[in-house]
Amino acid sequence: MSYIWPLDPRDLFTERYPQMLGFGLPAQDVDATRATIKDMWPDAPAGWVHEWSQLAARYAVEGRHDLAALAYGWAKFPTLADEPKRTALARQAEQYELASAGFPVDFERRVLDVPYKGGTVRVTIHILAAPGLPADAPVTLVSGGVDSWKMDLHPLWVPLALQSRTRIVAFDLAGTGETSHLPMTHDGGTEIIEGLIAEARRLGNGKVAHLGISMGGYYSARTGLSGAVDASVVLGGPVEASFAPARGFAFGMEGIVGNALGFDRPPNPEELSDAFAHFNLRPLLDQDVHAPMLVINGTDDVHVPQHDTLVFRGRRDTRVELVPGTGHCAISKLPEVLPVMVGWLGQTLNT
Image (tube, rainbow, N blue to C red; front, side, top):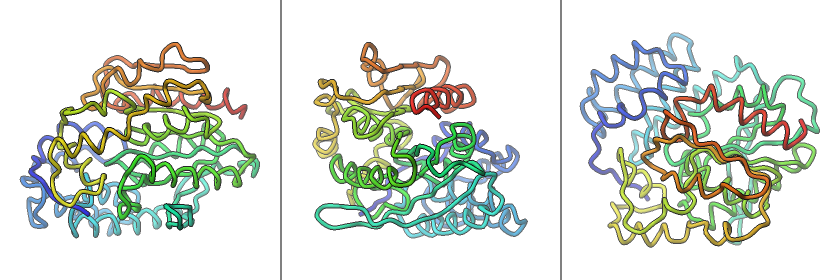
């Protein structure tokens, strides 16, 4: 249920360099790694997974488990297409747990059995909370997208936990991270999240928000539009135009998405279009049962058309922010976007 495809690592650095630095890796180390890497897939010197893993191992020896977890996160990026990538993810999880002793938030790693296609499936979650947070605080479910997963986005979850006064429950979407063994589908992925919502209602005072980033924003848009949660934050989520037939992809995204969808070889455009057709949220957009929603993206997103943000304008209980001068998920302006999300969650959930 995975495959490799032609991918130039220079393209990934072009797009992700601000994220690498913004989430805490030292610029000199990223620059040195960037200069060394020449190939994407070989697990050998000058290969992506090898060089990032070398950096991560150095951090681990130095006792910088937080940086090691970040570097192993880039080693397994952008998808678990082969065994070296899966090894890097396992090492990321080990370093992340070692780093957790120094987190400025309370932390718990928990494995849940949630309903899935007539049975159950095991889903690993991370629970983060501000020290002293009351047991009856609301819960915010959070996830990234097809290539940035729950451990990768830890630098965002921590300030969100500290400032929002909600208990953060981070998880990986079906087809990604520690849930990569399940294909990403519109229905199966939603069923898993519905199980997590039910668990989240038992964790706090019953109020649950859902914040999704990129493809995670697709699912938070879906739970928000259906009224499955009490509040929904959609950060760079595809909802309609992104799933148009024969759409194009940038920066290797066609292979990342194909892996998440469960293909074991590069799908042709018709197969991708057929898979995407089921994701279109137009039927839910045509209803009026949604929870309060906050929808944000950057004006310069190369992955998600502006339509998928602007389509929410004019809906009741919905705030829309299209942030100028930034791209997908407004990632380069997260310091500006985070207070907006925190303030909106506090007002909506009465925290």
